[in-house]
Image 1 (spheres, one colour):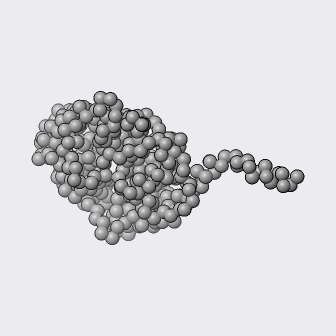
Image 2 (tube, rainbow, N blue to C red; image 1 turned 45 degrees about the horizontal axis):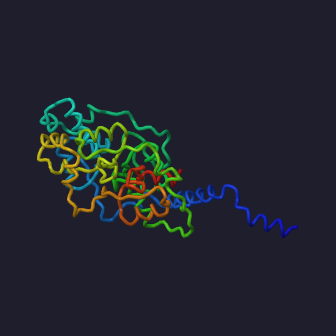
Image 3 (cartoon, one colour; image 1 turned 180 degrees about the vertical axis):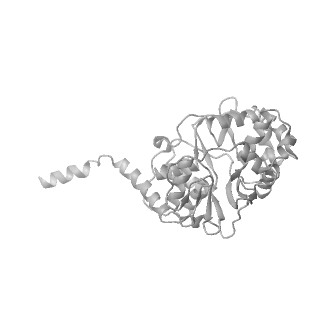
Length: 338
């Protein structure tokens, strides 16, 4: 009787076994992140570009291009404090706003960062009470001692893509953290030999959701409008048959890098997206190259692809190459700590 019962139990799978394994995988990631401070993300040879709010905004954005960086903290010399972050996306939005209102580019080039901030001041970000070690004001930042789980939680709760690591004693910014920064650290240092992530990403819902694509014949301004309306950082580019042929990201500053002044930058907004993509140098390994996956690939394999090619997103396609979704570094971080 006892032997028969043991045999029956051995042959019957545990109820909710798949859910248990998934929870164990996420728990192991959360534990890993909790055990490492934000200081772990600071590279000894890394640099942080900081702008004074008194400099012309156009000069600041061309400095971003020159330093090949996506964001920079803003220092107000009068208040002796950081007032926010300037990103490439901010300048793109500013250019589109001036273009839509048909304001002369010369007016844009004469404005300082502080003047632009005063004209477009936004309310403080949402997110409720900040975790320990976190500043939660107009310039959210984390102490170097805050753990990476807290960093991820603040990124997700505020809807931000960039988060400074700051020394509270003298307000020095040591680094600017992104989802990609966290994921790169994770894939480089996380060591878990159990197979905890064998479920297909399509089954987990990571690559699902509304699919938004654009065509290369669309003007850049039209593409940026679609991305702003849907809150997208990147969008797959498809041909007339709906097959994915490229990807365009707001972080792509090709049209800024090729502009000689604000006038030409605004004019580039009317250029077809295909022409903008054709200007990209194929010899440069940018983080926004097109890499694909399928809904049937396991989370483990997608995790490993991120580790090997060091990029920001995967376009999920079916067997015919049609877009089924986009998997980003943010999606993976959100899944792991949910």
